[in-house]
Length: 209
Image (cartoon, rainbow, N blue to C red; front, side, top):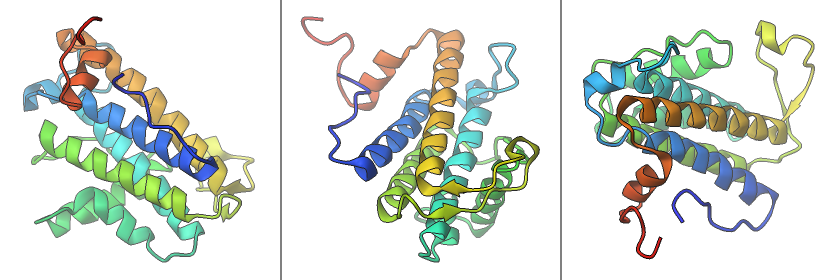
């Protein structure tokens, strides 16, 4: 059935699979949207689907970088680049992605659409960011300490672990995925089952449903 994950084989695998899947869920809500629709705010929320996608990208890339840094791989910056610099990626876009990723953890990301953003480019970036987060989780020691960013809502938090960060990121992206579902259904009536089937290249409703 669309949007069900594959089976998981352990803690690393479970965290990675579900974290990546929730980012994929945000990506599915963008399918077929025009630039105008990406920027439209169909509810009282301050988010449009496009700005919500930008925020999820910043959060996902930011936490992937934190996890890689905690793992001592030295690839935190490379991980952040994957969100903004694909094949033929622009260096300025990559710099903006890294800045957004860092700012997202302290609530300072702009969350604004970029001039080059389309539904297709945002979907590609979300899928790449989810894959990067999953890879970072799989490669890390889940008990490794992670520095707590300086932000008012983290006050009193003295120590994080990679395990906690992975679960927190999964929780936050899952909440935004539900928010994206509501925005898309309000915008044009499309809903999660049908959008997941479309992403998987399957008909909706399924035969014998």
